[in-house]
Amino acid sequence: MTIICATDFSQPANDALSVAVELAKKRGERLFLWHAVQPEAGDPGLPYVEPMRADFAAYLETEAERLRKEGLVVASEVVVGWPEHELPARMPSDTTLIVAGARGHARGTHWLVGSVVERFARVVTVPLLVVRDAPALQQWLRGAHELNVMVATDLSAVSDFALRRSLDLRELGPCKFELLYVEYPPAEHARLGLAGPVSVHRAQRLVDDILTRELDRRAALMQKDGEATARITHTLGQTGSLIALEAAEVHADLIVVGSHQRKALSRIWQGSIAHAVLHSAETNVLLVPFHTADEDMRALEPPQLNTIVVATDLSPCGNRAVAWAAALARPETRLIIVTVVASERDTENVAQKLEQVKGRLPAKNVSVVITTGKDSAAAICATAERLSADAIVVGRHGATRAAQLLFGSVAMGVLQRSHRPVLIVPDPATS
Image 1 (cartoon, rainbow, N blue to C red):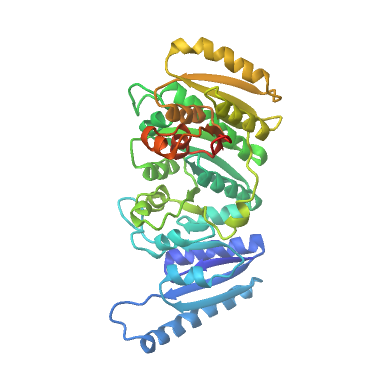
Image 2 (tube, one colour; image 1 turned 90 degrees about the horizontal axis):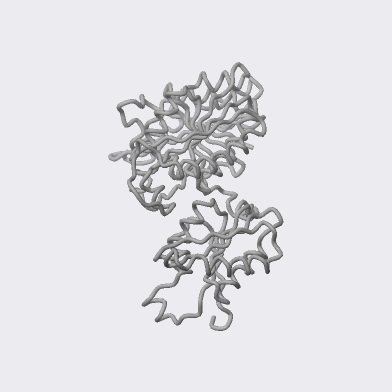
């Protein structure tokens, strides 16, 4: 296994190298020292750049030889080209981590705009450790103190993956984790289908209860081998900057943040939380990309279906979806049957029919929810969010394509709106 330390020979890069050395010793991995000579406008070409590359290569090899005398396995390379293009193409296939230093001071400056670190963050397929406070990491790696780690989460699969990867830090030394969720009230109210005024200063109890349940479940995973806490803060914008500020207030030694790496649209990256954290943080940042080199195999990991929401309108098609959901459910799975009615007057009649459906199912952990709304798809999605469902099952009636275009389809509406996996069960008579 290989740890890459990308250097530009600056003092921040030297600080990053000192951390990379400690990590390589602790993990027993090879250290790869790497530098790219970036072409500039006006360069006459390779005859001009090659002597510069050779000088840097000689300097880097001298540094590598010094570290070999300390017992490390070290390689070095200096290339010509843009770092964000050359490193992904040239890095060893067994690379586990990239370590780099951050230039400048975060407060009041845009120290990463156009920097190599920022460009690395867009393309890396392994975790990227951006070093700002080398002594904190060195002391932790030497066993001198516990690492105070803040893990930023948005409750998505991306941040959950970063959370799981952050637990590997405990193999290197004692860690104390804090899971931080930054709530944006307008989005939470829309996601959960809540009406009424929205205030950033006074959280709605239902929203906090749901978020606390989600966070506590994740904190429980982190508490297996050490201390872990979770908390919620609120904002009406600037989520990444707020994460950095919260980390500074609790004296975090490291911020862990997941990255979607939606680099096809640079404007999205510029507005991403990961990018804002990198810009604003005054401490070390571990950026964990979701789209890693092993994603194809990682995608085969079976999901945990703790809660399944299945929607039915009590028609044969809807109840067939219930049967499919029951077939997917394990003994420990919560199966929640949801029906949307137009008005409260229909509730009593529907409740009796749902109890009949429930009684026909072999699954024991079954409950029913009746909700009202004119938009069935929105109501189903909001209910699934409030119940923290792991999947939604819904039937699709056999309407003609023209009818679906005119009047819409509840199944397609759920599929388009849901942030959770959706299984659509078609009507076999007309599909």
